[in-house]
Amino acid sequence: QIHNKERVSQRLSTLPDRLTYECMAPFGKLAFIPGRIVHSNEILVLLGDDYFVERTCKQSIEIVNRRLENIKEKIEKHRKEKEVFNQQKKYTSEFLNDRKNMFEIKENDDDTGVKQEEKKPIKSTY
Image (cartoon, rainbow, N blue to C red; front, side, top):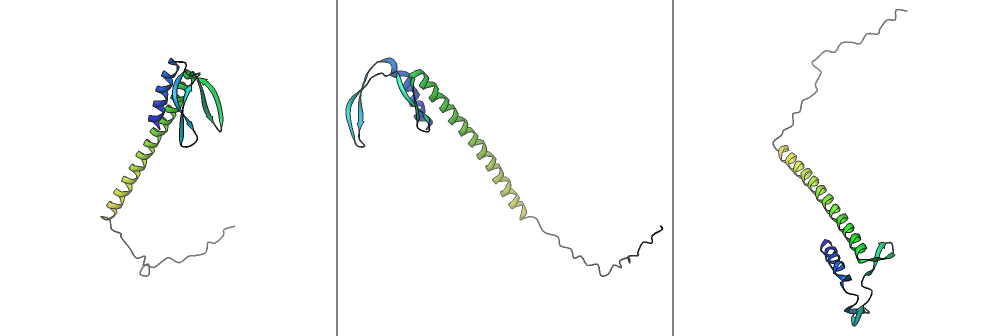
């Protein structure tokens, strides 16, 4: 997706060099016909939620670059999250490996041999 946005940005920078371009325009799902791009400096940009706006190539390049930076920030954020998860995974596996070297100490709570003091009622001095 980053590569596609970079290619769009490069193409938008060269698009206003000429007023018209010869191209193969799509005609249905499977066919193309020879066509011409006119008003090459006017670009229809999707803002989202089926809202479009007409912008110049320079403005469109700025929009593409902002979207590209947003994508790069998200990728960096996900890389950091992945690193945190890998550290947690490493810690957990080390803990499980250390657990093999541990042993449990069990003691019986056998108080039958010890004589407990009898509880005496407290006398009130009032």
